[in-house]
Image (spheres, rainbow, N blue to C red):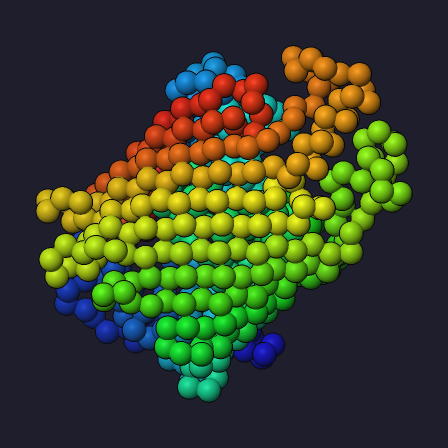
Length: 448
């Protein structure tokens, strides 16, 4: 497999193809509304490259959030965060004749600030969700994908090896909403210390086997290395700091119900790295009262369920219609602050005949704190003699956070979608003393 990553044959093939590109008559112009790229088709060269196996991605996501009402600090302001994505996908069957083989390289850069950090959530404990999902994991450059994928047995077996995140294949979910509770792999949001979502990558292997055309099972092994989360390690390739491995397994069913697409996921994850108990010390007593170190567990585990199903279509256009979705996760109560999470929502694509590519989305989520984690916070305050929430040294006790989001996606061009949204967060960070919050947001998704 290491020979497949050698840059010399890839560079030679790329140079030869660039010198022999055919001219395309119907190339997309810059800023054309029906082009998938803002910069057009480069005079036909881009489509010629794609036909030869070279596909390039230049993406931008920007998110604005403003605290319109409530929160920990009601002083109104607005914050902006964004992400640039630079990717290359190579079809190595077309380029080098390696049957059923693909290569992906993606670099990302995040920048900006988040309204959730100091306006919505109590900074003494932070929050669970984020009003701007694109913020996080260090505002820095990162190597987000570096993998090679090979198919065997006429495509029934699919093996991917390299650097990538769990949410790329497991517990996957779209990211059109702006609130983190409705965006991407939710397991990574509630056990983020061991499950690293985009844009973080780690060494990994994923094996997928198709049991039927619409049913597959997959299993993965991911390096569990917290040093990969550090801002200065965005391009770290060594395994120093590895604590163990995270192993997810999942069954994915993608049926058509009355001709309409659906996807159903059920999965389980297991980590063999040591995990700290949220409440007890080695003797089984409350560590907050005994003053002893919290005991370690030899593993950590959890499971997830997910469903997406289109239920209506408009006339014969199946790209328009109503879709329902729901997700749930359960986590180890001994070692995790969040013990369960549930979410559900609807998306309507093409709501108006004059706006067939627009979409409307609405979703609700509940994030529930482990009772042992809550009890630990109460005992920590008791041991310190703290009872006043307004005391800076007081540790706020977290319980349940509820989130809701309504957005309207304006499809301005095939390369540009703008989604104004309104978010409501009850008990931000699960802290009952923090006022319920209304956030006005704006999400921009563009491809160059």
